[in-house]
Image (tube, rainbow, N blue to C red; front, side, top):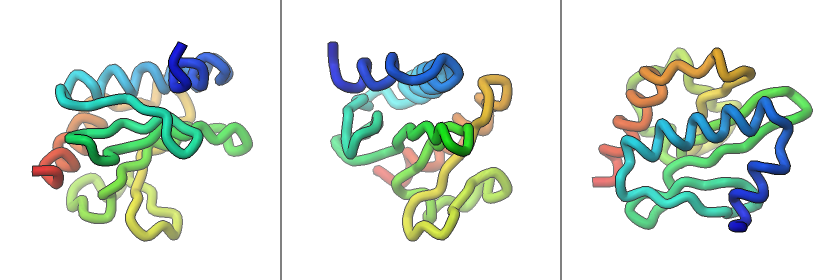
Length: 116
């Protein structure tokens, strides 16, 4: 089993479900993506460059979907979290029901344009 798969399966069920859902949504839109295990968390690479990571925060109860070029984004600023970070902005989900696939895909599409 790959390290990424092992990591996801070790997570509590609520995080597993959210992570698998987010990965499936992103991978459908990013055909040339690759799911790797980097810096101790699942990281999606696009065109061999860091695209976004999935980091469950058990203490605060959310899944952080952080986009490597997040600060270059113009749209969806009302839902993107920067939390004093210099380059990464993220979408945060506390439950599977909170995941808005439309917003997620709009963010992914905008970030994808930064990799042209």
